Image (cartoon, rainbow, N blue to C red):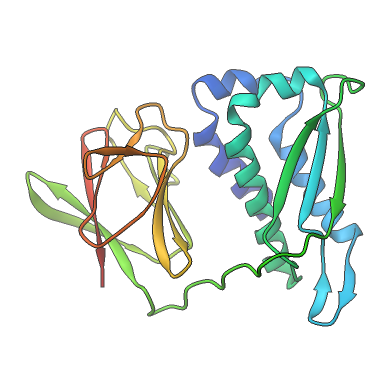
Length: 230
């Protein structure tokens, strides 16, 4: 299934290093993603605007598994919420509000077991994807102080890293496999670090997530990319 494959691809960069050890055994993230898609299909409701599906998911996880991936929990939650968005978008289903994925520790569950509660959470609607031709932007590789290769931002999420499947593939040894990504958000663009080993910098400052402005320079290892609007 494409959504699950994409989920695992995105998560590879997040769990490298210390996170790789955390997911070596026991509960696997893809099991949670697969359960979300199953719950969405099982809990469809016909509403005024179409077919509604749950946008809230609460996972009960045993203490051993919760402790193992606690450091990656924020990133995992964000990627699972993206699975909710993509699952609804692919099938034409409606979300009543932004996806919400939460975890709680259930001491009665053994390693590898989990529970899942799916529910509807009303909230502000998800922003519509930026139409083509509106808010177009690009990343420009800066080499020896001069502009080089250009990478148009044509997707909602544009991945930067050493992994061959990345949208911007870097050979820089200071870059992680899936180092960072540029996202279209609220009519603009943000840079998000994906749990990289060496961090992501914008204009000489280390960032976790930051809105981008024309002329901002993103530094990954020794690679510099300039954000430009067209």
